[in-house]
Amino acid sequence: SMSSSSPSSKYSRRAYHAGSWYDSDKNTLDATLSKFLADASKNITPSNNTTEGIPRACICPHAGFSYSGPTAAYSYLALKEALERNPSIRTVVVLHPSHHVYLESCAVSGASTIETPLMNLAVDDALRDHLLSTGRFEIMNQRVDEREHSGEMQYPFIAKILMSVCSQEEIKVLPIMVGSIRTSKEEFYGKLIASYLADESIFTVISSDFCHYGQRFSYSPRPKPSEVSEQGINELFEYIEYLDRKGMDLIELQRPGAFADYFREYSNTICGRHPIAVWLNAVVANSENGTDELDVRFVRYAQSSQVRSSNDSSVSYASAVARVTGS
Image 1 (cartoon, helix red, strand yellow):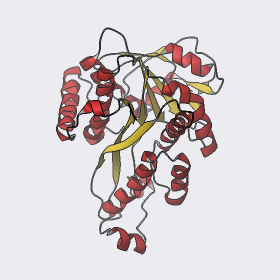
Image 2 (image 1 turned 180 degrees about the horizontal axis):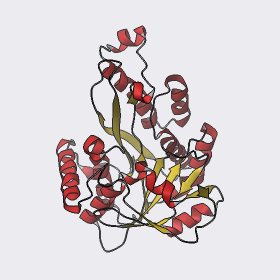
Image 3 (image 1 turned 180 degrees about the vertical axis):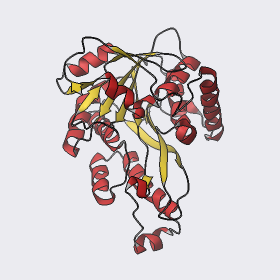
Image 4 (image 1 turned 60 degrees about the vertical axis):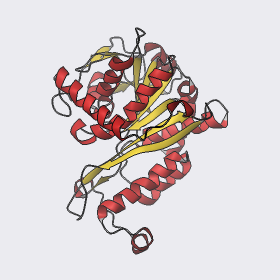
């Protein structure tokens, strides 16, 4: 299903999930995203933005817009701010997981264009060629690319933001699917792409939902008595947030090793754990060699519903923004 050579014919990636996961009508979708962004901007604590570093990346959920769109909007306000404050941005890299195919490496999209109901996005050929020249990336074929929703749920938001702020310069995208790779490979790929992600012409979107809780996800742990007493956990939805926040704290602390240990201990069903880990390893590599220092903060957390019994289920959504420190 994957190839490692340049595709002879590039395809236009269709908006495969439009009409089911989000609206296929341009005006309806535009109005929906406008509302999500307006609501999020009302809730963000007004701060003097010039004192804060320019946003360089965000972690963003990828469920149907009716579920996670309001949370995702917090991340996309950061992309909007980044584009307004950093005129050198040329490419939005989207790191996303694989839900349907087994992939033991990372794969770039083979598309030349990504269609959304709002506008079409051009794919960054040059950056894709750079990554392919390392010999470490495969290429998604059209079927694999289109069926994967975790990248696609970012594209209408990206299109919406580009339409709202952009100058004539065309800003491109490059989707990268991160497979179910082991910890050492997460570190390898993080170091491999670190220098690209440190370039100020690139903004990175990392696509992930958080805990998928309930029998339908084969994940329904109960809190230990010690956790109940120490954390004051009375309801399962509080325990789910406690589990999610443990992982979120390690992301904010930029500790990919501890983040990997956390999965060994709790097995939390964070579907974008591998893209997050690859990105975290890149952030750490850039910090250690003095290229790029980022401050990572979660700005919004939500659950699709409040789980009170083990028969219930929910998915958690969290948005994080990574900003340049000391700028």
